[in-house]
Length: 441
Figure 1 (tube, rainbow, N blue to C red):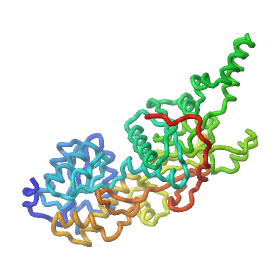
Figure 2 (figure 1 turned 135 degrees about the vertical axis):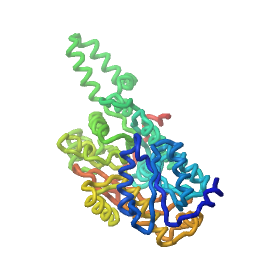
Figure 3 (figure 1 turned 45 degrees about the vertical axis):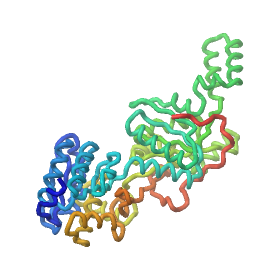
């Protein structure tokens, strides 16, 4: 198969683009094309020529599209997007010996062979980065994880937990909840030992509850007294940070539920901490750092009109693109995209733009005359490509290496910060021996 592809007349300036222009993923393909069109002329008026083929989001069609473009002499393939179509297209590109820069997040994609590259951050990289930052820069040694019962929640939690274990830390509290859950009190209570079952195991609580039951005969007064007793029980917070891999809209419901269980998550807010100290008459407060993923990067999370912003104050998370970044290359892309399309770009437009721009630079600067020369040029980039989503090079596994956008929430705003500099929030203070051991997965 590779010999047949190589036998076709190579066009060293032709790039094939394979995207799901029809089907369920059409909207994402349109976004990717909008980004690509800012750097590659889709009308064929540039030195680098382009041919776009529809994959329909189907694996077999995607593989056939790659073969079709190889037969036309394309020196490289850009795309596709989906998981199944991404694996099928990459498998065929490897068989044909055609360099591919994929935008798919499929697991194990670049392991298919030396011709497969990827410019799309994986869930593994994102979760690992957050876990390592929390351990190394925030001094967090123990963690809680609160995740949705979804493929995304499972994947992110698994990678985060693996990175915590690798760093010599531990997960001490783990809870998961069904999708579309709107009440998170029971899950948070179990994380901090305040569920009814947990409280019954506390000897002092049990004795006082029995006393109330014996001494107060009026049902209403008894219920009220028991409720007050439950609220008086201090939470057992034996973790420094909580990782929540869910959307901003869900986090808007979770964060107040965490605060309602007397877990303090505003460690960077000195004014708020002083109020808590006066109220609780406790000078030794243990604060917990909230950690999230790129799904947190939404105005929904910091809309102060809803009153939720105060509960996510000081939170830290990463994103694969941040349109409000001060990075020069990002600002240039955002300005150009916004002028052209009259709307701000998202992460998919940015990464498609970067993949196309990187390929264009290599073709124009290095002028490879074979697919193998192009593959070697991509592996051995002379300098990082200054992309909209960060300076990019390919690692040995041909995964794009680019810095994440590190973000934190301050006074109702999502603010970028430098992960190499001082943290925007105070590091975790050393914690006394926990009263609860690590929980298992």
